[in-house]
Each structure stands twice: as C-alpha cells, then as structure tokens.
Image (cartoon, rainbow, N blue to C red; front, side, top):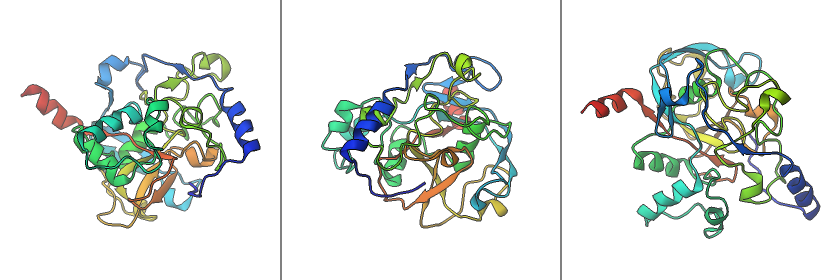
Length: 295
C-alpha cells in the first residue's frame, strides 16, 4: 500500500467521477456462509461467526512478508460483516466528547454526506478504542485473513479471479479521491446478477459473507507488524509480535492495485497514522459471547 499525499487535478477529477458512477452498487441481503447456510445461522447482530478450525495463511508466490505459507488453527470467533461506518463512529464520538473527529473529516461534512461509508481517517488507537466501546476488539491478523479467504486458499474474497470494478472498489490511484460518497462504497453495497457477469454467486463477498474485505477501505488489525513473523509464528491463535513500531493493515483500499488487495497482502503504518484509505472492523471472542448469553 502506498501512503502518499492525495490531490485532485480538475481533469482527473472529472474522469474519476465518470468512472466511479459506472459501477452499480446495489444492496445485497441474505449473505451465505462458507458451508452454504444462511446468515441467520451464523450472525450475531451485524457479526458473522467464523467456525473454529485450520486454514492456510500466507502466500509463497508473492511478497516476502507473506511467506511462508503455513497452517493456522483459530478458535471460533465473531467478526463484523461490514466495515465500521461513519455514522457508527460518530455515535462513539458523541459519547466521548473529549475525542476529536478524524482530522480528515472536514468538520462533519463526511458524516453528513456519507453516513453509510466506512469510517476512514481513523488512527489505530482510535479504532481500538471504538471496538472496546462497543464491547469488541480489533481482529488479529490471522482472524482477518481467515474471514477474508476461507479455508480453500483463495487469492481474493470471491476466489482466484482478478477483480472487476463491480466486485471491489480499488485501483483509483492517488488522484482517485473525489468525495466520500463517490470514492467510497457503502459498507453494505454489493452487486446483484454477479453469477451472470462473472460466474460468481455472492459478488465480492468473502466465503463467510463479509463485505469489502478487499478494497474500499484498508483495515487496521490488532497485530504489531514484523516482516518475518510468519517464519516462527504460533500454529494456534497467533496474536502477532509482542512489541513493534507499526501496526498491520489488511485488505488494501480504493487507491490500491489488484496485487495489493489480495487477502494475503500485508501492509503497515504507525499507530497514529491517518489517511482517507484506512478504516476498520471489529471482532469478538465467540466463547465469551456464548458465556454471556447463558448467564
């Protein structure tokens, strides 16, 4: 992922806006889980249950920080089906008056114009605080990857096929920023009729029914970044290095090329970094949720 200053040239702005409006982002309901079941069986509010088990993490054919491929076992957990929205994040700010809105939110214009778009411009610390505020946490890097790729080793959430503009919001480059409503897709957006156009049954969603795991907004995860972490990471429930200077980002964004929105691609940034390409979603331990429901 490239973190470079964003600017808009008048001619590019016009071309970008024309390009963005060609994609049809329709609502998709009733997401399917990996085993073909209904969301209802796996949902906890707006969260999806990812069942316990093993999956392949990493990719031997790409960047060195994705190697080696290795098997990881994760306990079952919940993860948000959608990226946290601007309207959800604003509720958090309203309840925590001492916290400042992200510096890139243009004095509230972002929320007014694009309440259903991902909350971008949020630091890692702020994302972590939000997840704690709603009784959740940031997902680990391993949890994020399993939720995005499933257990069949796919390259993108929808499979191995290269992305299209109506599957993911990506490849707009540093001059692709037009506005919150045009550059970013609604977190609930999908495309109907994908089986006709590209042979896909569930559009750009992950095997478990999560939206925008590739493109739209890159997502903070809980782990510190270490380029060589995969070489000796734990086989069960890896939590990332104990310390570090930068946090991991996953999924790529509207700015990134196809290779950078693969589900195994790893990027990083300082915890205090903010950018219009970065958002987040939350996770929750399934065991704690089950215990709370029984009490």
